[in-house]
Length: 409
Image 1 (tube, rainbow, N blue to C red):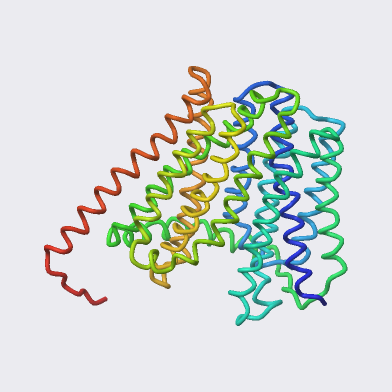
Image 2: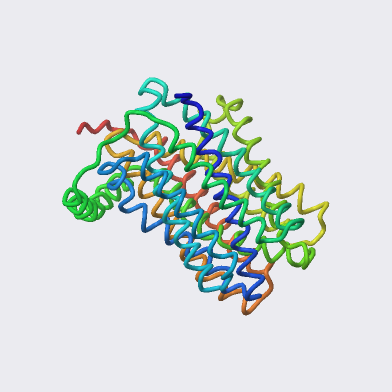
């Protein structure tokens, strides 16, 4: 088996996922003309991902992961095809939820198989290739969805989108490796019960750990507010695209995200070159990146001039990816015994922030303009981050003044 082909399968599946992110949002907004419905579609997708994240790991450990990936690809292809004859808003919400649900199943099963296929000693190199291919899929998916929808219409785009999943499934069917063995349904139900119980216990232990690591707590607060603010630009960009050109909304929607994606790709290339700075000022660079990210979103979502939107979308992509990458780097510095749960809580905070944002943003849109809504939500992140910076600086000053006593476990 060509093992690298497995990685390209994931990239192709990601390409489809990023395409339908654009197409479904354009479709539901075209059908309803309502920002509330648009926010509901985004929230449904997020909710699907949150729910599946609770038990997708258990399923991946109990059943054949290769079959899980094949089945989720087929399901995604079929539910996308359903929208061609029946593009009703309610069905779009259901499809968005199912896409979020099945995409998480695919991602978890895929990631779980990496050490088995490539070996424990090749995980780091393999993940680097995956990150690069994911970035390429993101840019290609966003731009491809915008261009195809503009020139061919949404039906042809949905057909192509569905085909990406079917091709991914077909390649997986042809591939063979020593995959996981299936376990009994009883073991699955037992695992789910244990998982739900462990979630509560994990949250308690993580909270205790964060109390002893105030800087880590502060970074997570910024990350939570960042996810909350993120709902504003996720909702605002399709509305901005409509304002730029009503009949070519899909094109500009995809292009704005595509240019943002190019900035994100550049960030992953230039960040390693500043290793010396990150080793000394990791937290501060993370905080400043969050502020510049929000500033960028505020600027380009407050205008309809393309010559302003595209450059600032590109710069915003750089700072957005920097903030996300540095947040993950900071979390990776936590103790090994609790690191997995720290990341789990990070994903929970991201989901909660998005969920709250998708409730608040439509409420604000009914009472003010889209740029004003973006100003409020991203302004909240800027103000929160500034307060956190002053608080973190105060903690750092106190640590210098107070003699440190080493506490043993």
